[in-house]
Image (cartoon, rainbow, N blue to C red; front, side, top):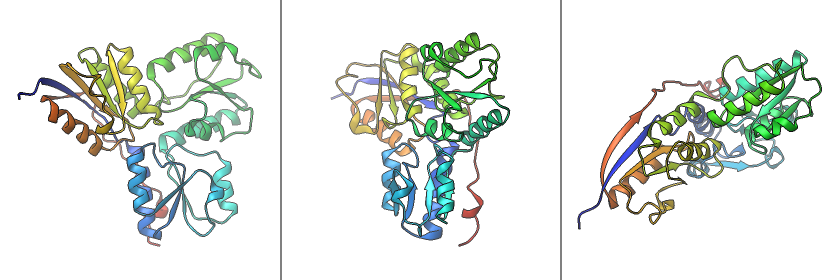
Length: 316
């Protein structure tokens, strides 16, 4: 039986970013240096496949520092942690390695600088997301106010409308954030923004690649985890830019074949914490059912690399 034809547009860039690469490397190098178990506070990156692979190597994932013994190394996830966490680890004389993405750390430093200048901070982010919790936790309670939508901006109660600054989570929708920033500027004309966009290069690039293909595809599959903020934004970006059907899949077994029956074109991308092996698995699953004509849609090239902390580069 002949397979139906399918044009598959593969987004580039997609998948792992430099911060995720670095965080995974940190866990692997810590295991090599200190042996198992190495404890990791929160999922190192939001991807079950990655977490399971590291667990198999001897990483133990916990939600709180209280779950870690004093005599084993602990790693803080790529999303960043409130200031109290490393302080507590130091008090307990633990070996700890901070795998916070340098682009998240940049936002932390920015928030601290504004605070030192006497400004109250407005954070654009998702409530409860570990990155938001980490950034808000750099400063005392009440110093950082969270907004998720333009409607939140209208309800915001600030200490002094002339002494404000804003920062954002690094994995937001570029377009949605633009609307919230406009609302902040309209209501608080004196508000100070970041020197350079807080939304990171990888989030922006992956969204741009999706936009470039969204109006010429019948469906879009985004490889990523349900708790991955940047992956979920890619689904939204596809839908908002003209793609009729966009689905988040963790791997090939999640594909809803009935939903994509009869399609002629499909786009595939992957969130910043999704490994390429899962993208290949999805492509192979499509090849099993369709005669695939694969075309890469490249909108940017990435060559960013972040060094691992020095403690891992010196022998034990």
